[in-house]
Image 1 (tube, rainbow, N blue to C red):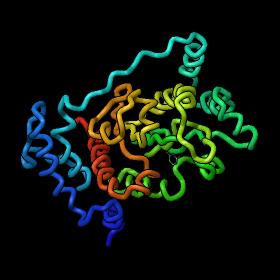
Image 2: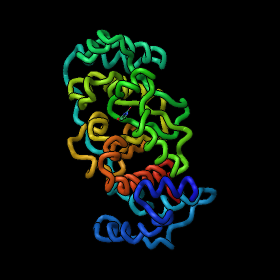
Image 3: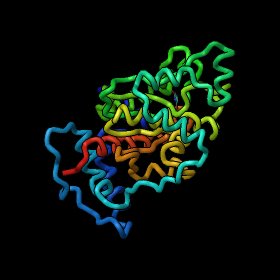
Image 4: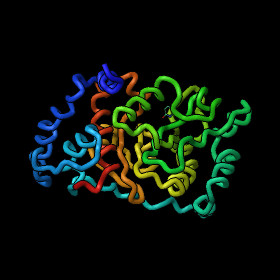
Length: 280
Ligand code: URA
């Protein structure tokens, strides 16, 4: 069995070309939405020069991606604290090195006390500066802190395999909304995410990835400022400052919730489609 077939099997998709079988299901979903006209698969032009996975993504998602059903969520106005505004403004003008230094010496939230007490480091992010995809997770764990690399271990392997399944595992920059690890792997708290958000926003602005793949509810809250669950937000294509943004499940969650792996596969197809938009 090929590597791709193994990966798809791991995602709960067997045989490989089950994605073609997804089409009727997606067509039904599209047809039942009054705002979105159904388009027969045959009517969608086959994009030139793309791999079978990319073509499948286009065919499956063309009717969805190109319709107004996929919209950005409204963003709430920024908090009106002059000191916070000042800090955000300073961060918004930093270059990459300044940003990296500011992150590593940050003391804006109580997580820094843990970090300093245990002689730990921040985890800024890893990957090429010319990234097709920027993956945004929640926070590093102990190993990831020690190696200053997000998405290691089993969850990281699953993420890499998922991206490899859509042939998009090379130009990937990985980062988290929190740059410090949380004690005992607890979830990020709102105040921590709020303090780290200006760093993340500047990181995105400097990196200018072609797409954002936001995994997990804590990560999406920072960028979309929404309390809706992943299961709802993953159904739409969003934009952050005009960069296509796809929401999906965190790979750590997927390891514990196997049935959602096949939903994550659909999100990957959305990601692939968004990367190759505008659609033909
Ligand atoms: N590892 C990370 O770095 N981030 C996550 O969200 C999950 C695992």
